[in-house]
Length: 181
Image 1 (cartoon, rainbow, N blue to C red):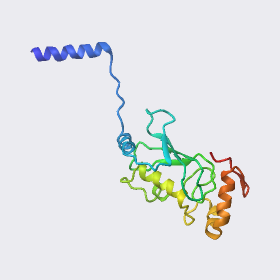
Image 2: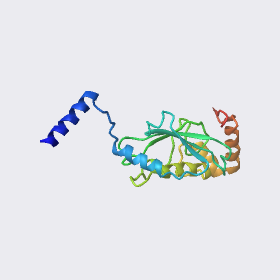
Image 3: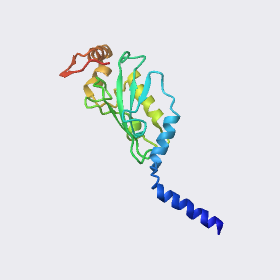
Image 4: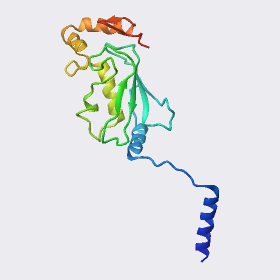
């Protein structure tokens, strides 16, 4: 009888103070939280949450390649993680206009682990390393920008020149590239 009285008294106190709202996290949010906690980024990569830490499902990754054609550039990618993550990969876009065989002028990224090779065992760290790898070793075999891929394959010196011109705010083909940060 005393126990029942204490339980009812506790319920009355909770009702008087109003309900406590607790946002229930989806399985995707929980997995993403774990992935972020286990990140081991290359020293040339950083992560930011433009909407604040309350919105883990949308973030940015900045890559500053420390070798290769894109040395000295700064490239920003947005990540939109679906609620069903890791069963579907994040949507990744490059915000920085870049002359690259695997990134088109709309910022779409051609990275196999973001498409057909995605598996739930992969994680955010894997994607970031994949993006970093695109800048240290661009892939002309699976291009989005076919012109850049053909030049990389057929004339690497011209490709390097085009990358430098694009990163300094010049024109490549018909396209003007704003100065790379």
